Image 1 (cartoon, rainbow, N blue to C red):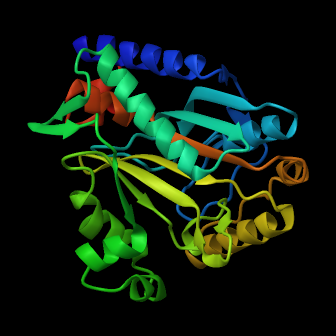
Image 2: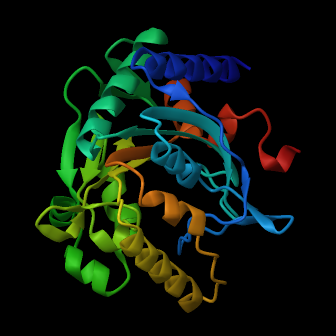
Length: 297
């Protein structure tokens, strides 16, 4: 119960942070006729539609309709995800802002974690599983290419060519990230960022990052791709990957692609609220920060 009380405080502080920056909170449908086609996320069907794995598409459609700075805390659903840091029903915080880049998101992540630490009584510091992490100083930034050089026995290109990129990130690189202070792993290969804009003049590199705290992947953010035709091709590539793995193709979200042509340059991010609660509750297992893990229902 103490963890649930602290989780409630973390959520309250999160809302305070975004309200203080003039973001407004939105709600979008949980059940949609189409979702983001992703090779490695399996959706949950619901009466001929899908339960969202992320509110991303609808939130971007709000940007296309004139929203400037928006955030949402909501339930999302992913089939077959269960583990020490995974739930099939999870809570995500997502925020989007027009005319911003992934650099702005990194600054906002720093501000959010510092604001929560201040509110829970540990200003400038997070203690998790015996380790003390500095939140007051600048968070570390490590490019994906540099992380492969430092922590992997194979090169980035070899990992991509052999389909081992995610494996090496998970087992060789992640455990080293965010140990003494939070760390941004940034500039992913474009093939690993289907909704992200490329760097100008660097078409193979995406303006994408992930935030790691105590070796835990906490958030995934990027400068948004706003080209609907290129986005369609990337969705098709993801569906091709799904079929190569024996999975079914997912319908292309046509209304999103239509609205994408009207969306201004923007940046957006998803942050796992369950994992955020784990960190501030000093909980080693995600089921310790939710009221009812699925096995107890």
